[in-house]
Length: 402
Image (cartoon, rainbow, N blue to C red; front, side, top):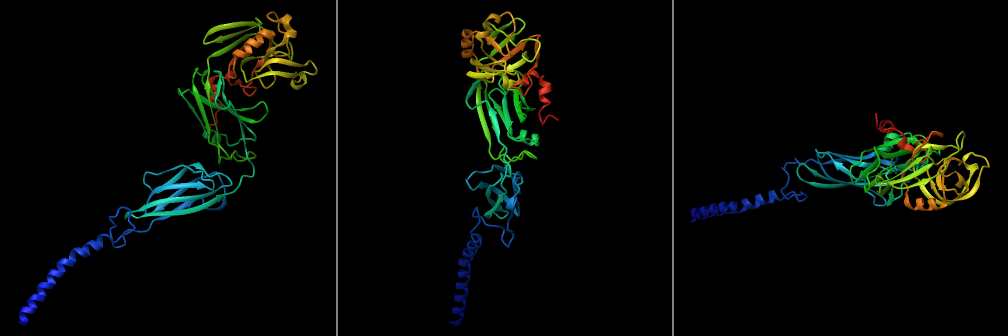
């Protein structure tokens, strides 16, 4: 009897061991409850911890640097960098998954939260947060730009940005200026001095725009330093516009006539009188661009350095330069239209012709002015005179040309 009991206990022990074996194996395979994929790590502590480092770090750190996240012991799966108002800095994870760098720079006077998700070598997902703030800008640079948004412009219209303060870091600023066109128009930025004396950068095509071209500017300047005495940019700028019909105004001061051409065909020729030869009242020559249609304005000779020569209200005024050259109605000069130049530098015509012409043209239309008795070529910063430089000369004015 005792032998039988021994054999029975032995058989029971074997069965119990067989039943317990799969339960033990199952417990081992589900032990890593924080694994991202449920498969667990390699066991034995092989899933080493992931460390994450963020730069910049601290309070009131200098702005103008990209945010960088690095990891050791795993791979970065995503990074979100957001300021206190929810604006985010885009960025990209490197191919090896070890680093992430923002495409935009940290801006002045902002507080950022950096949220990083990582996956360890064993598959564990981790979320970590870091924070830093940037010092505010002691000086802010601003931009005045042309043309305005959603405008329809002529074929010679440049994109023009004039800065409130000096821009010493021209290359860094130019890198942030992105032009997109509907037909891949070739063009270049060029740095010039505006007529006001301020720094200015214009983008012009190699040749006149093609009618119908759609153009977009994105000036991603927020967080860019202008350099000494210039200050920081604290916002982005953008504008878009469409190029209208090809209209070219030919002004022959020797023949005392103006011709409007549209799509290569003459629309009308108008008798005019240009600037008086022999002194400061001469007109400019070269290509000027219609800057604005200003309607009826007061013209005072003292504002353009001509003493008290005139002070009168002038109709149908169309600005061609900052220095004060216009095309406009000049009924007081009627005796000279078509036969001699007798103005104070402007291109005058009859009121009837000026009214018609004013309705035909738009800002951005080029005025190609020729004549022997002129005081020189329109300078690039005196209105939109960039067309008076060769393409090679204009390209050389880019801060990124070398």
